[in-house]
Length: 340
Image (cartoon, rainbow, N blue to C red):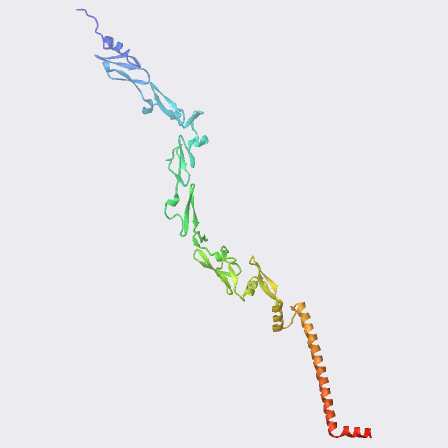
């Protein structure tokens, strides 16, 4: 037998095998076994025919120390090595991964009715505006209006809830108005003037949420504007309520439009006033003429009567004197003497 040296495991085929192993750098013999050495960034695993070179995850082992190399960077493992990269929400500037404010570009993709909130080194948050909900804070998702009126106790008593985009409002029911505390209380339509009662000839009475009209004394009708008419004999009240002071020889008259004014009485009515109240400063000229004429006629009648009475009285006295003289024979003697 020959005395040649025995071959180690690498020489006996290990080197040839390791030459086929990816990322191998050579063969290391261990007694009767061998394993493949590896290139930088890889580590050997297994023995003999199971030997291989496995990538070292520098990022998992903390070997990368990217933060000390590039601020705010992330360690990304690569085959046989690693890289320090800025994530998708940062950009490299002056060896620092600075945050990108995505809200400056098309509001970060946030949909309508949202606020775009930039997050350092992360995706934006699309927060729904007050009164909206439903997008989970994600870009591109719409926020829907919240119908607050479907929820109870949003509005006070005697009011109705009206939904509006992103909000709501409370409106008092008909006949109610907000007080200083924002509560809906019965509105006094009579005080505010917001009523249909006749402003001159009717009274307004407040009732809960409404009002009632009634014609004043001396008038009849519904009490609504223009629907109160004076009763016969009470026409003067219409002018009084309107502040019109008609004279003694005037009455309150209305036209077809329902307006009232002071108008002269008829001649007969004026004469009645004169006879019942006597003449005064308001007596019309034509009545003064009538009074003067009547006075002249009266004086003339009195004078005529006096003269007639005096004439008749004188005649009567003369007749009585003649009769008296005749009885004493004055006539006969005188006549007899005259004849003789």
